[in-house]
Amino acid sequence: MIRSQDALHAPYGGVVPELAARAHLQSLVPVIERALENAGTRWEQVDGVAVTRGPGLIGCLLVGVNLGQAIAWARKLPVIGVSHLAAHVFAALLEEPDLHPPVLGLVVSGGHSDLIRWHTDGSISVIGRTLDDAAGEAFDKGARILGLPFPGGPAIDALAAKGDPRAIRFPRPRAPGLDFSFSGVKTALLYEVRKRTSISEQERADLAASYQEAIVDALLQRVEGALFPSPARGGGSGWGPEPTVVIGGGVARNRRLREAARSRLGNTAHLVIPAPELCTDNAAMIGAAALIEWDRRGPDPAPFDADPALGFA
Image (cartoon, rainbow, N blue to C red; front, side, top):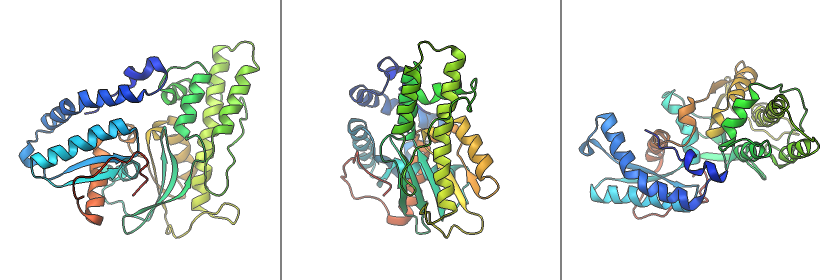
């Protein structure tokens, strides 16, 4: 069961932290009770509690971390706090339980664009990250430039389906090594819109499709750079004869990214992109991450704090 806040934040064109935290506070207990009911599970059958420690908005994290530890204390259960970024990688296990590292992961969301390596010991290291805007943030800001509603990613995705991705050659973000940068392509879209006195619906669709194509191309260029290293790209090695690539995070719902990834990587790597409902933040992926982390380091000693700047560890 998933409780979305999109309608709550849509009038503001983005997430309002105070409203988000209050909505978490109001929704968490009813959502947990409904989830147990839908699963036909009683509290007596629960063996442990997993909760997101970070990263994210501190108000929302505090609601979850405090409730998770309170449940664990009241029912005398072990508790473990996990990174929701790592969970986007481990979400692939929900569809392919036999998946094993080493794995190259692309985690793309509203606040993060990270290229990672999932090691055989269960740990994760970052080999590339965004230097400015994340891909999801670039989609949201691009949507506002085009006059589209929040959330911007799905809005651009839908409109781009009606446009020509070759209509405008937006610059591909340039960054050193395997890092990402999306501020330049966002600025290019802004200038392209400003120089027009009016924009027809077809032109708007072409702009959306071309902008989306630039972001998708930049993401996959870095994945290819990590799989097939060169001195200029700085990629890694040791992926094995059939490298495994996992793409996760909210932006992994994007239809063009999924299609292009299969086209460009499908013949050279074992590609795993979870179902769209497993790409956005969800409790199932937190559970998958908890199983990996539990085997690696065991439960956490309570109490522990939320960490809005938490990485993959």
